[in-house]
Image 1: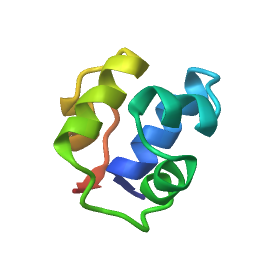
Image 2 (image 1 turned 180 degrees about the vertical axis):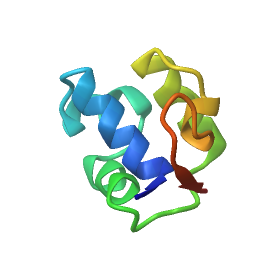
Image 3 (image 1 turned 30 degrees about the horizontal axis):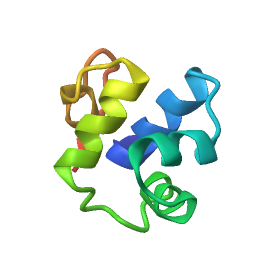
Image 4 (image 1 turned 30 degrees about the vertical axis):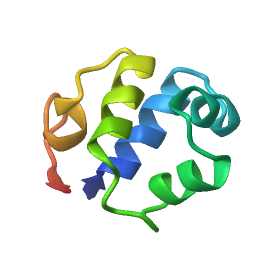
Length: 76
């Protein structure tokens, strides 16, 4: 399965037991915008938002663009 940046944001948010509302608020975006990121309606997520999400979710921003630590084919 191909994992997108949106898929990885959603996956990490759920692993952190965080709601869309909470993550969206902390990222400075609307819940609707986060929903669009997670459901791949918006695929060109601004790099500053990726950086903020990574910080909040306590992971490296490169995780969103990389196939590590999971073996997969990524789409940016």
